Length: 333
Image 1 (tube, rainbow, N blue to C red):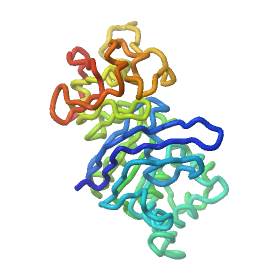
Image 2 (image 1 turned 90 degrees about the vertical axis):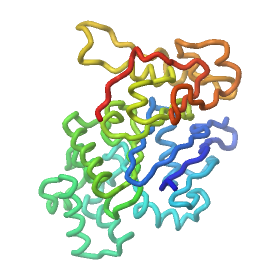
Image 3 (image 1 turned 135 degrees about the vertical axis):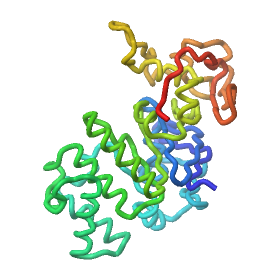
């Protein structure tokens, strides 16, 4: 049994006098211990809302959550609020997208790290401070004892992100969710953060759910990849299978829009036309149809279902998938 099993997750926002908006629409995936699973897509496709729903961090007003999310056999959505608080931080932890807004700006970093140790591990005083310094040192922050006394604005972007990772792994959680952990960082810091996450998975056996729009991150880190569009999974495959044989037009377009070092000088990029707002309701057909170069009338005959047109385990939600390999990408082993 997988550590985390998400089955037909739906997240709908609404309320009195407001039109309902479904941000996540029937998402299903699994994450095993020691596995890295990616949720990939443009901003607005439902990635972050999925993670916040799993962590129980969405505002309750006007919120409706459907489906199941079983963590170690227990449905997260039927747990009491106190049980979710006990689970969050100890068994499941999250690295947020923007460290500057995720850390409390008026509280020293050391206090924010030791708070987790006190809440979930029962540590106090000097023992908690020493463990907090060890955590900062573990994630590569120099002079950790001094950094404990500093405020978030006194740290660089990379150090703030490392501090968030230290807080997330303080209790050695079995499940870690990373929401765009390398956003706004320079490429060298990005590489260091990704290497740190990879070490956690390899050495601790942590299950990692990586949320990103960066396919370079996916190529270097993820085992299984789920491509989201307008709240639904449109393609799901192993990393090598997805990069070698992108089959949904959206996944094919994402890969085709990546600049290549071996491309001829002056060759223009090939972006996906339109934006995430150019879509139709899934009930009326494929939400990607208004942006799709492979559009046909069959795309408007109701919600397409996930099928396996190419290989077992490679699922695609499309009535006219891309079955040629003209743009297959190489991916690291």
